[in-house]
Image (cartoon, rainbow, N blue to C red; front, side):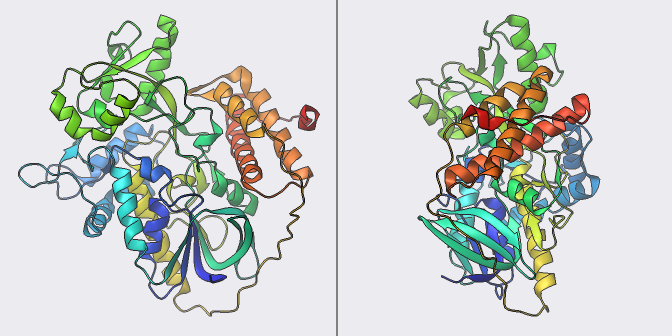
Length: 501
């Protein structure tokens, strides 16, 4: 394979693939997929993609209003305008690429409703919209002669040389140095920093940690969304998500007594935004002394439920629950990241030539809480804008020979000690879940800072365990630093994690 490219994109989800598709065909592009090609948060998205497209009764302004309300009015007005006004183009483009959104009997698209939306504006493919979009984008990208896709290729490090980004990539046990003139990080979220998450196994914050190391500003990493209706079997780390759309189609939330309770907390009841519902569940848990909660749509027509939510219905059957006949157990779970690598309206970071798109980026469109189904839209809109900006900058620039970074690999180095990632997850679950536990924040921050120092001080084998431990420690440290700054102001800590080994 080639060693030098015009653009290297780290991440093979919707943002990474759509960015590659929108780059000019005369540019050489490499897309790095950390694991299997469809193992990403994009493929797990159930509900749909929000947007005003051929909807006479709806408008971008209404969409913007709902986005601002859900985001606590902390949304960036410029990027949110871009998001809602460029939604139609994004939806039209992926339809032309073969994405099959559900339609009504009259042939018009079926638009569903989700919490926080005042209009039906969510386009969906049953309850597996993300997988439909991901697979169609992947199929098209694989037809492009200028795009190479490297599977099971882990980004271990990135250095900026005088005219290139030099990537250290671990592929099938071999270390590769790959170089590019521009780089896009589309590496997804940080869900695996928690004990329980709806995120896929790749969501360890690698891109955010490396951007931080490169000097890119990271913003609002503590703005973490906890989805209120993750399936709660109390066993699995990766929690199966029960889509917001189930409540959009009329499901009720019930407490340990099987009573509806949302009327105690918000007039929008089950259709309140995610953060409101998650907080309400925690308040109700404290009121009742129980963490047993249920989602119930069994009062709806069984055939409608099976046809509308086939993936959710069949998955729940595997766990012994029939969505058409009974309530199913749920509880809030880490789901999404609103903050990330800070970018402008063209997805440019604070590092010249580096762009960030999708969940790893902070565009500001989500404010402090993402409106349901705006994530896939953000991934498409801003990855296209990144591609457009890169195209303009590379159009007439000289193609000098790229200067690679000389990585020194000690293949005999010891492996990182086991248990570090587990320690980080326990800290985050305990100190920063739904509502921060102020009494745990300082101790959690201290442990994360000690782990970072420990990993930096010694030479360990560069493998998946080491890279993910460094990534998780970095993002946990940034999250808890922000939380401590809010709660206490700047905090100074002593370091002695090594004593634990």
